[in-house]
Length: 103
Image (cartoon, rainbow, N blue to C red; front, side):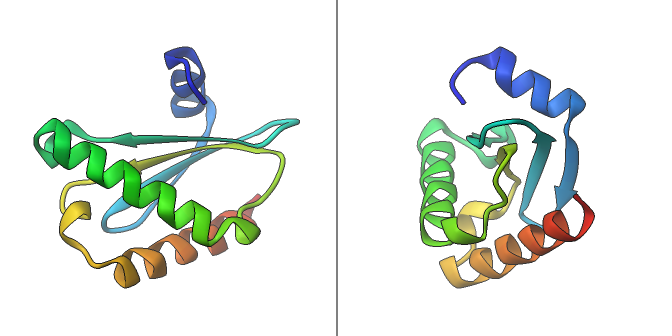
């Protein structure tokens, strides 16, 4: 996803799944698209960019588990950037399980 309109539509119309350090908004669609965002509560721009890089890495490493036919926006919450990758991966896989179970 690239435009703010795409992000806004998923935020408004999509279903939200949340864990301690991240949120995923999911909207059914014909195609699969991903977007990454970081709350300003995380801190400076470099901190937010680092968080988005970690989100992209999570998606890359677990892409086979991401459901198709959905638009997903992943949002890093405060404290995300201070967690180790293994902890974040566990949370992400838990969110993917919730998404598969309910949609």
